[in-house]
Image (cartoon, rainbow over all chains, first blue to last red; front, side, top):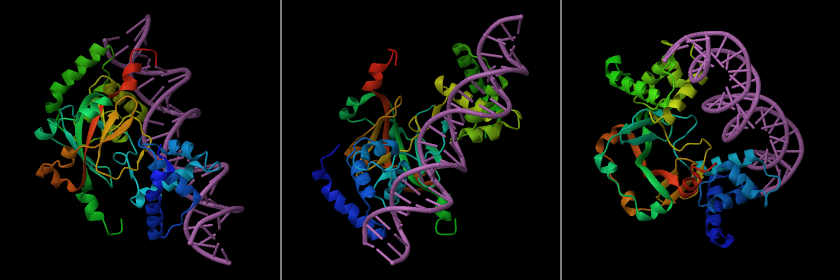
Length: 152
Length: 152
DNA sequence: CTGACTGCAAAGGGTTTGCAGTGCT
DNA sequence: AGCACTGCAAACCCTTTGCAGTCAG
């Protein structure tokens, strides 16, 4: 958690972006924003929900979801990993890396010897034992690029 | 899809591993294995389900799930991305990379200038436009390492 | 004031589980 | 023949949606 002082400049950013998007700055949005910005872990909706309950006793979980997605749409936060609506399986046991489409979730393997040899910084070892190092390239696949702009 | 010929040596591997684990090689497991190994995309359970229906007209979706998780437990396949499926949010907009615990899903950011400068192979551009390149380090965090072996 | 926002509750969709019949070893 | 495995259906959990009252601008 971060002290209120530190998040002040970020709150100005929130105010700005919401105004620019033409949406209202509500008490809920303010507190949810403070909660997610103040957390260095990568909270799920429920964690945010629990975290803001002290300050917003009547807030509901679905408002947390709606608000977080609003922030994500405005570019104030991002989501972790590919759009993971379903579990996906991978029979490729060789070292490889991924290209993931941020629109549709399409995932393709590619091989790269250079990436296979990546050395992780020592500090990362403080988190735990390392099993695998994979590069994830995010972008928009050709199909989604083509579809863009024309009526879905 | 891959021709039956190509998957033959892999099937021997399946037979081996199942025997070693003391579980039976059933018709369903064989076909599901062929389906997932024969796919270079990263199919979800439903896709596998549809794919094996021709050969297994009465198979059920839950058997597909059980079988895929069995394979994953035996190390015959892996799953894509972190283990659990709650959506997680990230307020860190700076370029950064992730350490992810494969047991509990705990995710931590780390910064690495060298990783920020990674050049992706040209061939990857054929998949689509590139927005972001992130390194994902998978391992087991200290907490899970400590818990290992002792009764949860 | 007024339209956007919230809270409630119920629906939705992917995944898992309990149970009894089936079939492989 | 025994026992793991499968299919069925219902349960489960996270997430989204429709609606009516509420609040920011």
